[in-house]
Length: 110
Image 1 (cartoon, rainbow, N blue to C red):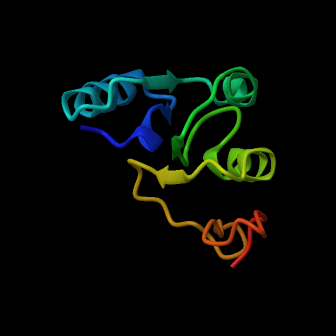
Image 2: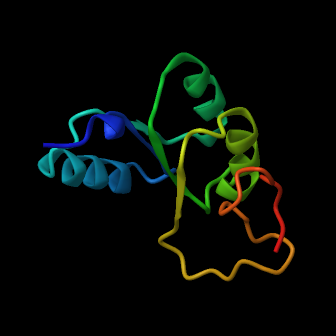
């Protein structure tokens, strides 16, 4: 049985195939309430309407990258844990690396 505190997972990735694969994998593990978003520009509106308990956020997306979206999420929804993910072998440059360990300082910094 899945703990009650992990009731709704939000997956954010521009690649719909990855979203569907992750959703299927999570559901097969007992996570039945999985939301997916493929357009990062719609995330903040969805969070205003829907309650989620954890977010999995892709770093590399068109329009609004995960690194741009992360501070917005953390500042408005500090209670929601955010897991950063990427399928790319990209290097996050100094000064753009996200510090999510401290919820008191949601800025992009080392």
